[in-house]
Image (cartoon, rainbow, N blue to C red; front, side, top):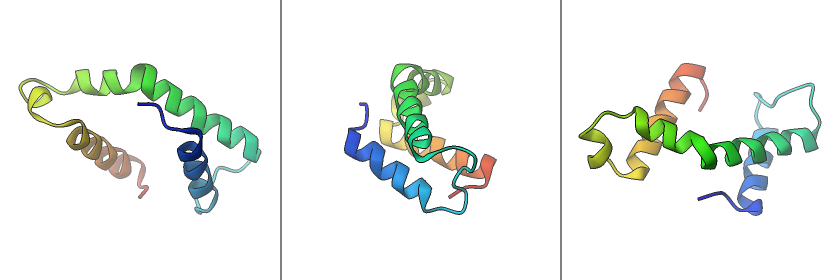
Length: 81
């Protein structure tokens, strides 16, 4: 499910408040990135991540459990919280 405009804006605001806030781009460009990544995740990212999980785990895990695992991997890989 694609995020609402309000949800995307909340993510944008949260990112703007972090020390990891991307430099060198404008606020509108950062919001464009948030929108593009959410569109990508909806179109292909979620399906690709799901397909990477072997069976029978793919069928056993809930969507929320898969998302939590994906977030944990990204946090560890890129040292973000």
